[in-house]
Image 1 (spheres, rainbow, N blue to C red):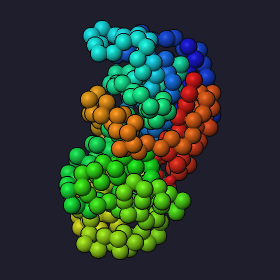
Image 2 (tube, helix red, strand yellow; image 1 turned 120 degrees about the vertical axis):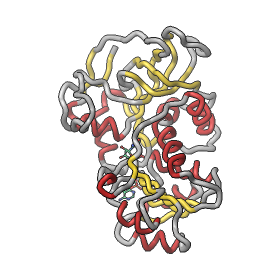
Image 3 (tube, rainbow, N blue to C red; image 1 turned 30 degrees about the vertical axis):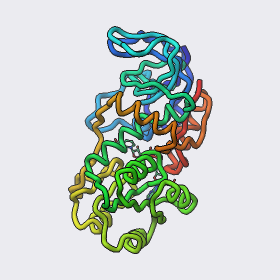
Image 4 (cartoon, protein in one colour; image 1 turned 90 degrees about the horizontal axis):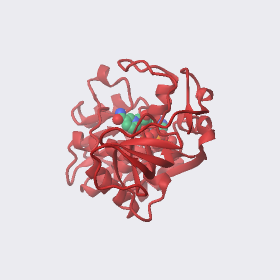
Length: 300
Ligand SMILES: NC(=O)c1ccc[n+]([C@@H]2O[C@H](COP(=O)([O-])OP(=O)(O)OC[C@H]3O[C@@H](n4cnc5c(N)ncnc54)[C@H](OP(=O)(O)O)[C@@H]3O)[C@@H](O)[C@H]2O)c1
């Protein structure tokens, strides 16, 4: 099968199409004929540099943490799904390919297109995880940095559903999008903390940094301490005493509910661009800008 691979770390240009063996699904896995594979910041970062504490990459690497497609083979012990079913989930061994193995997966509801289904698992799992960590409750005020991003838009809607008042930061062009999610919006950049204070004069109860753009010191000041401040993207977290959340708990039941909520528009997953597999390098360049305007998705 064809897949996007890289054989050395480097810029987006190291990504190229290659013929690779088709893997057989292991216990609990399904193999899908990929309809769409979404790109995450992790794919871009791990293509560029070796992450401290992570094992050395085994080349060739097929990137991609999440995909949607049609089941074409079942591993031992898989029940409740049959060849021909449409599913989306977390990959093992990469997603930017004609076929992929999924370890945690759930059905794609009728009416949900493959790009949005593929773009849901990582961002939704992350948004649930950080809101649980923050312990967001009814009536509280939550600040979300990067509210128009893929994790941010899901976190805003989950927090609003929980009854919180949300203030979200985004670029000028995404202010309306953040308001449409149910948050009060303001721009990031110089003076952002004063603008948030004006929108939340009684202070903020919790802060999610889904941007990683150096906003933690002022966020700690706004919150009145590091308690209930969480980042998913700022490596300065440990120096500042802030929790960096990265470990995931992949739950097929939660994923099924999230896919259904996205299909009903109760949760928002914005796909900015859909590109063919052969344009993976361009797709990574878009994500690397830090302002892709939504998920970037590849289709074989
Ligand atoms: N630790 C984890 O478990 C985990 C999981 C998923 C993602 N991540 C990481 O979390 C980050 C966000 O992921 P994502 O998929 O949501 O990325 P994304 O869709 O690219 O969103 C990034 C957002 O950051 C905003 N932004 C850029 N500069 C900003 C600034 N100075 N202040 C506030 N917001 C700013 C952008 O807003 P505009 O477009 O409006 O400029 C954009 O909406 C990435 O670094 C990703 O690698 C971590």
